[in-house]
Image (cartoon, rainbow, N blue to C red):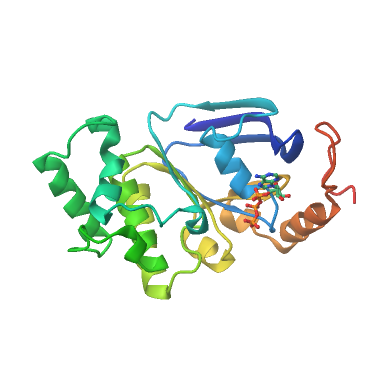
Length: 245
Ligand SMILES: Nc1ncnc2c1ncn2[C@@H]1O[C@H](COP(=O)(O)OP(=O)(O)OP(=O)(O)O)[C@@H](O)[C@H]1O
């Protein structure tokens, strides 16, 4: 397994947002994470990268290297850094935090920018980019991270059709290279068309498996019901059972 979650509970200030999650992700799988607003999707990714510690349970991963794309709205674009320097941060695993950007690194940055359609943007400050251009830059940095487990939080939200389509091709390329990808998405049609597996989350796992078997009307109804039944102030072990509402 690339990733094994056992009885994982994640939350904030002891209030759980994701309850008792068991999940096995096969190496090389391409999985969408879907669910209503507040279902715990972003929380799950934050738990997987270690930004928040589990309240209960375990995360086991065999992946050597992890890469994470936060929601675009969470990225601070006021920081005075050029596109080239920002993308080069993806090479820290090989250069070290204070390593200089060598000639070969500069070539890798140029290749990554070309792969996302931003050739010639390397000297621009990131503050001078549109939202869609910034998302392309974030993908260029991910390309250089060379990760075997890639976590994406709403990678195509607020992008025009062309940008979303081109970045989807990058995701498919990672899948073709055997990397494990887990992406939070809201567009169920895109999920049905492009993601072989889906995790439907509504504070708990509603279903996980082949997308067509997960995204049934019944499962989507259960997800909505479970999400509405959730009590925001519930203590850690006061579990809201699926179907109990
Ligand atoms: N930093 C935080 N502090 C306290 N509670 C939080 C924090 N971040 C999220 N939450 C709460 O945790 C729950 C799950 O939020 P999360 O952002 O993981 O949901 P989501 O499924 O990603 O939602 P959306 O689709 O709206 O992005 C929500 O009730 C939210 O209010």
